[in-house]
Image 1 (spheres, rainbow, N blue to C red):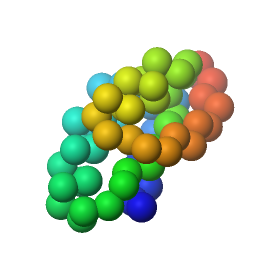
Image 2 (image 1 turned 90 degrees about the horizontal axis):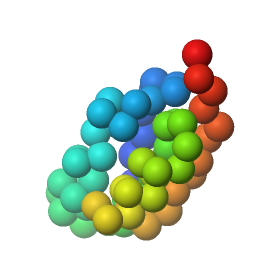
Image 3 (image 1 turned 180 degrees about the vertical axis):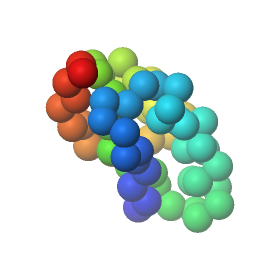
Image 4 (image 1 turned 30 degrees about the horizontal axis):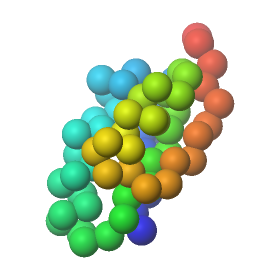
Length: 63
């Protein structure tokens, strides 16, 4: 399993590069986990459609 994340907190969906999830899964041949730093759960849930199998949700506060 590969954990994909971003160092920005809070992260915008645009800066989270979710579109790399299918590429990482194919490149490494492993399941992808997401370390979500976005506000709310929408982006994390949407990442499931791209192949995320585990979501580690961090609280993100609006700055």
